Structure formats: structure tokens, C-alpha cells
Image 1 (cartoon, one colour):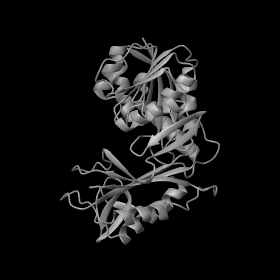
Image 2 (cartoon, rainbow, N blue to C red):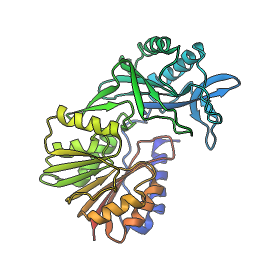
Image 3 (cartoon, helix red, strand yellow):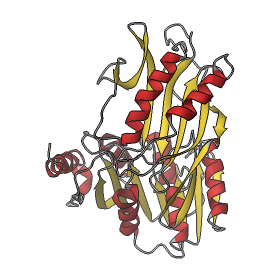
Image 4 (cartoon, rainbow, N blue to C red):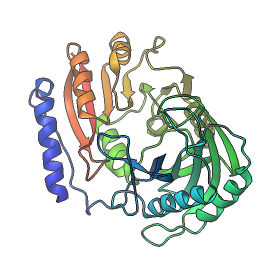
Length: 368
């Protein structure tokens, strides 16, 4: 489908779904300078036993059946090739696949990410236990299959580390809480907007290689001048919004984040960028009172703010809220919860998921 038609459909759906809250505000969306190709910078493939053979890929729509990925126009070319190689490696080592039904087996999946600003690559295998006899061979194999990759412009992708992520918990959540480095380091560094970001294997980072142009720059433009403001950055991750706001002149930024990995990265990023007017609070958003602020930025996961997050915003009552949503459905629920106290003054759709039905939305709210 032509990208212009895709964007028209997404804007039409946003207009219809969010109509009760927009009061004449028109959803904005920008046509990209080129048709998006190979923009997704991370893969997370579950492993599955298919006809007695380990397969890696993504789930077919509405199922838990793996579709092996041999070619993809959405994700980074190097990652597609790497995913194929990882499947071949795991099969050659005869590593047993984790079975959700019984809890037996070793391999749960693989994850890899390329940093768009540095072309650094980090690769990991998700396993149920850290020690197994094939571990040295796996470390050697990962180094081999990930060492000669290139991006779609022919530039080398530089492997900086291979890791094991350990998840021994029942259920189908893929990533676990503990990561061990096999070789190199357990984090990558991205350079963007004049800032340096360390991102560990288990930490979240935007998956679109042009996220600065598609999301962050337009979001900050919606806010205008932030110099001298006290800001709370909810669900702040490694500091992707918080550091940008501090650099733009905010008087003080409080990053609130529940992930220990992301909090450690955020603190390292503050030091690396010499930003002293930022603090990191390691706690779930809404679990404790927030400091008084002039602006609150909230970038929750796909489920949205939920009741606890919306209650935290209402209790803090900042004059303005910048709500970043990766689902229009969750945005509609969040706006319903905030509508009595806040009105929408601007809405921008950010197409971080081209060629899919998903779209990110940035909504600016002002207190009534």
C-alpha cells in the first residue's frame, strides 16, 4: 500500500477513535521524504520446535505458531540475515528448545539490536539456565555469525557484545531479569541529537532508526521553550526524553522508571553527558507521589497509563502533559481518564511502525 494511503488511514482512524476528546484538534502526520524501508532496528524472535526442528521467527497473526523470517522489508537488513544465521547456529549445536507446556528445554529465543547512530550491534540468546555444556561453542558461534554484517548502505555493523539472557520463569514472557556477558560488553552506545546514550541488553530503546526525526524532534517542537521548567519524565527509560529536555534548558528533570537496567543506563548517561540537573527515581510510575512540576512527560508501554498512571498525573496536576502513546486504543482510554481535568491542544501521529496498522501518537494536554 502506498505510504501516503497508509498515513491517511491512520489519521482517519485516530480522528474517529479520539473524536470525543479532540474538540476540533486535527491529528497531524507527516509524509516521509522516502518510502520507509528496513527501519526497524531490533529483532526479538521466540524459538519453537516445528516438525522436530528449532525455528526462529515471529508469531503468525493471532497464533503462537512461528513464521521463520527469510526476507523482510521492514527490519534492518543485517538483522534479517543474522536471524537466519542464528537459527542455523542453534540447530547445529543441537540446543533443546524450551517447551512452554512442560518447562523443559534451554533456548527460549534470540534478541539483537543495531544502534542507528553508531552501527553498534548487540546479540543475545534467551535461555532457561546460564550454565550448559555447549556454552563455549555458542559464544564462539555467536561471534562468528555476527561479525561480518553490513547495513543497507553497505557500511559495516560493528559487533560490541554477545550475551545470555536468563529466564527460568514459567509462561511466555520471553526476556528474563538477568543478563550475563559472553564476550565484549552487555550494552551499546548510540549518538544522536548531540547526546550519548548507553543502552543495555534488557533496556528499552525506540526501534525505528529515524526516531529522532519521526518522534523526538516533533515532540519537543510541540512543547516549545522548556528553559527553566521543572519536568517529570514518567516511564523515562534510559533518559531518551529526559536528557533531551535537560539539554534544552530545563531547570530540573526527574526521570521515573521501574526497570533496574534502564535506571542504571540513565544514571550512566547523565554522567556521560555531564547533566547535573537530572535525577533518576527507580520506582513504578504512580507507586509514590511525584514532585511538583511545570510539565509532565509520560511515555508508557503499549497498555498505556492504566488507572495507576492516570491517577498519578491527576494527583500531581501539572499545567501541561505530553503523553506519548504507542497504541491509539490505549490513548483513547488514557484520554477518557484525563478528560475531566485536561483538554487536548495538539495531537501528532508518528509513524514508527510503517507498513503495519500501528502508529505512535504524541498528545499535548493542558489543564482545564
